[in-house]
Each structure stands twice: as structure tokens, then as C-alpha cells.
Length: 79
Image 1 (cartoon, rainbow, N blue to C red):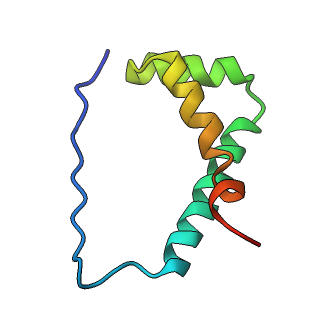
Image 2 (cartoon, one colour):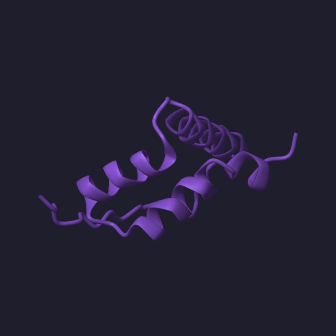
């Protein structure tokens, strides 16, 4: 069931930097999405197990990512 991971390469023009507002909005959206997943009614370990079963990633890494995604706004954005 494990699918091979696809390598994603992000290409950005160094002459056209991304606006801070766009980055801030993306961080806020990611933070909100992670919190919505964690508050969707499933137990935390159920979410971790579902992601693990689908992706094959280690549960430790999944927990690390979920916890940090849900804290992105507090970590990277000022009010």
C-alpha cells in the first residue's frame, strides 16, 4: 500500500520574491488547517495512525509535523 514518495522541487525566481503578506497568509491557513484536522473529532493517535498507514511515514515524524503545523501561526506570525 505504500506509494513511492514524489520528490517536489520548488522553483522561485530570485528576482521576484514572495510578498510577506502572501507568506503570512499561507502560514495562517496551514495553521488553521492543522488545527481543524486535530479538532475534527478523531483521537490524536487515530489521526497519526491513519496518516502512517496511508503514507508509510514514521509515527514519530507524523506527530512532530502535526504538532508543529498547529503552532505555525504562534511561532512565525506577530499579531
